[in-house]
Structures are given as structure tokens and as C-alpha cells.
Image (tube, rainbow over all chains, first blue to last red; front, side, top):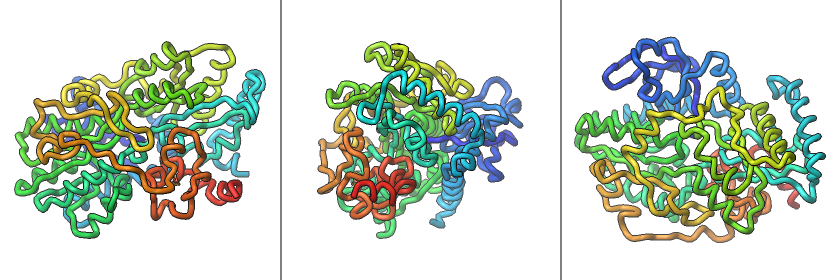
Length: 96
Length: 380
Ligand code: SF4
């Protein structure tokens, strides 16, 4: 919850609400890009961001993303975040 | 050897450790007369134990584990209030999974869920918003928990709910801020703190100037740090060098991620939606002035406290910690986790008695997980 996880923006899904699809360690998750949006949202596609509870908070470079992910894996936090994302999906479906 | 396996760059780690040893000697710090460095963030506490940095660094450094785990400082009364909300038949109570096992006076959210309350673990307040859209007949309450890293997410979600005119979404706001407890600890005459390792991701949001008071008013060094073990070692070295040189500055070791002024959009959203509470209760630390946030009146419709008449909007309700629990002493660094009489016996990660045992960012859970057996032996 306190540590952000790196993800790569793959597609803008809702320009008006400033939402985009991110790839987080192979898992697709819709995130808000309101905090990192500058000008055209499409410019974000392909960029790496640090995501906190569904909100991209900072644009980082690819190397920083890889290193952060490795550090989070070492702490078990990457797995925890991916599990939390899966919980989000099952919460919507009412299957928890 | 674990050292070389664990570090991505063992050579750099070794060089840093050598330098740290040297500066500790120059300061003249020893096991008997150590320098006290507090890592504020729970993520750093976790990393220090995970990589054994407390053992790799010389005995002249004593790490004091700070109050930077939001789950650990959540008072029991607030957990009780969560459960009161969650047990209302019309409510879908949504929360980060981390909060599920925090003990309340009677039960945890996990137990309430098992008893039939509609409690759902979500990843993001965006999931709660989506639930509110899908279930207009229900009241969706999101448990807003965390420091400056998660506060923008609930602020932006409330703004979005307002734009959409959602009437069945509200936030039970328990957001807290990092600087006030640091000030409270610095004001505590029993605390000995020589320097700080500052939180990385919190600082990414708020920038580095919120720590100026630590250097300017209290004359203590603080270095904002990243999460890799190398980052932490480097930051500890930077703190030590400041101590040796008699400097007190706010330095940023994590400049590749942390901008000096933070994130403008999230700061604006937080300022728009939230205001400071006059005071907020922290488990183990008591009431701290202006340390918590509440929803501003303009967004009252999205404030679960106002909507359901719960919490600080009702009368005050301090609850005592369970018997024999030393959370407060551990929280303020006055006691090591393994010296708590409950550690590893009455209190384990599976059956936590105190909140410091709940999340891997809590000092007790981190001790238990990585140094458990060793720590218990040492205590015996
Ligand atoms: S071992 Fe449990 S009861 Fe004791 S201080 Fe830690 S969390 Fe609190």
C-alpha cells in the first residue's frame, strides 16, 4: 500500500476521466494518470510510471522501473501488490 | 554467502559498508554509545530486516524504527468504527487488504467479514468507485488509510464521485501525514534521535521541503532514500557524514524519483478535498496535533463520518491497548520487539495482538519474519 509499483502505460482508455491501461508485471490494470498528465495523454503510452493504489504518481525511466521492481520482488511487495490487484477484480465481481 | 547473493551490486555494497565503518569510527560511535538513526518509512524498516542491514552495519549505529506504517499506528477505536460501518446492512465496506487483520477491541475486519459483513478487499479506491456505480442501491464506503502516498488517491476519487454525482460513495478518512509525528518524537525528551532516513515514495508526493523543520529547527540531518539496499546504505552514510561534519540538512538520495517540490496535481487534489484535523490519535503515540486529515465541508456528502455519524464527528472514545502489549514502547524505539512479553507467544503474524505484528512493514512482524528465532534466542 505504501510502496508504489512500476508499470508501463499501454493505452489510454478514457481521456475524459484520465484513465489508462497499465501493464504491471504482465497484469493489465486500469489506472488514473491524472497526476502525471501533461498535454496530450497519448504521449504517456509506452512510458513507465510508479503506481500507487491505482494512481500513476511519477514518470520514471525504464532502468529505474526494472530496479524498483527487483527491489519490490525482494521484499515480497510486488507479489502482494499483484494479489491486491486480483482482489480488486474479485471485489467487483462479488466473489470474495 | 547471503551478502553476495542478495545484493544486485555486492561490490558497491561492500564499498559503502567500508565507508560507513570509517565514518562511524570518526564520529566515535560505539555499541555502548551509538548514533541513533530513525528510518521513518515502514517500507525501509522491512528492507533493513530483509537484507539484514542492521547486522551488516557496525554496532555503533542503532536503527530506531519509525511510525511510518499506517496499519501499525491505526488506533483500535478506528478499527471498531470500521466494523460498525461494515456491519450496517446497506453498506459495502471496501478496504486495502493490509487492514483486514488489525485487531479492534472485539474483532478485526477479517472476523467481521467471516461473520457475514459485506467487506471487500480492493486494490484501489477506484475499485470502490466502480462498486458504487454498479450498486446504486447500496452504500459503498471506502476505508481511506495511509500516508501521503495514498491520500491523493482518495482525494481524486472523491472529486471524481462529485463530478459524476454519485450519492452512494463515501470515504472513512483516516489519512495521516508524516511530518507531525516526527515533530512529536523530536519534542519527546526521552527520545534520542541523531538523524533520519526519510521516506522515498511519500516524498515523491510532498517533495523534500516539508522536512526543512527537522534540519532548521531541530538541527538534525535527514536524507530521503530509495528502497534498494544500496540506496539505504548510501543514505545511512550520508546521514553519518552530516553528523560527523556537524551539518544538519535535508538531502535527497532518491532524486531520480523524488522531485524537490513533489507532485503538483496530487497536492492540489489533497488540498481541495481535505483539511487538517485539530488532532488525531495514533496507536502507541497518542493524540498528535494536526497529524490527520478530514474531508472538507464542501465534500461532506462523501464523508462517511458525517454521513453515518461515526468517529470524530461523534463523541471521543479512547480505547486502551490490550494487557501486556508493549506497542507504544516499541513504536517510540524505547523497547525492541523481542523484549515485548507477547512477542512470538501471545502475538504472532497469524494471530496479532498488536498492530506492529500485522503488516510486514511493522517492526514486530519484520523482526519475527527475518530475525524471529535469533531474536528470541538473544532475548532469552
Ligand atoms: S509483539 Fe505484539 S503486542 Fe508486543 S509490541 Fe509487538 S505488536 Fe505489540
